[in-house]
Length: 367
Image (cartoon, rainbow, N blue to C red; front, side, top):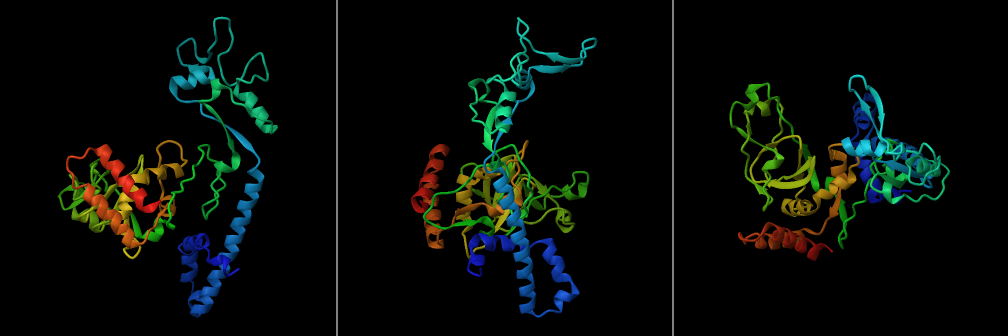
């Protein structure tokens, strides 16, 4: 048991557990403080093991329940495409209020949802759902292929998180695993902390009254380099004093985590940022900021594959912290940094070629 509990995946979960509000509250209680250090550690280990086994048993149950099930996922599209797919619209025209069905010249309903005359029509969604419930083989007609997919149900549930939410998300998650001869480490191992940006209230003129501290947003990220020296926008010292923003230390790796996912920069001066940006303050014992910056600049967009929220994509802190990247020794990181720096000295190089050469360097040392 002790050997099993030392596995890296378990240690990562333990880190989350010991950082939880529940454990912080226990540590603050009088009875816990009165225990000696060994007894405190034993108490926490028992709590962790009990919680961990309970959560994993529940995960296993839901995995077995969903493993052999296929689910039909339907995306009707938006606006005009949606109306064409479902075959009707709601009319608000005076005198014609209500449901307006789309029909062909001979009166046949155009909907791809079902047929009025044929109960089991292979070109209609209702037939696929029926077959899915009966666990029959499903073949999706070409006319439905852009809107309908058959997905293994367990792939719509996130079993990776410590906190098992049991949510079914209709956007299938993708696995992101980088090919490398080196160990893959999560961002949280490479970071001292991660600072999420913020926007002080625009209604308080005090926060914007003077150009004291640069306040960076994603459109200001440079294109042909990862280094940024400031911003065209500023907040006042008052915004910092009143904790409306946090100062990001020099040489932090800035990554956009909302809407446009994976844009990267490294700040050469202390700055603040808006809420679209997370600033990774690097653990210099583990990683050079430039290596982390170059890797995320090339592959940070893959974070979007781990997000299955509808609408505007957002990478939360948990997803960012658990994102695993190749973690070579620091001497290899330095070789990558130096070689890319040499390439970037060519001021006439085209952006597309520069991007390819950066990627070639990363592959050369990491794969």
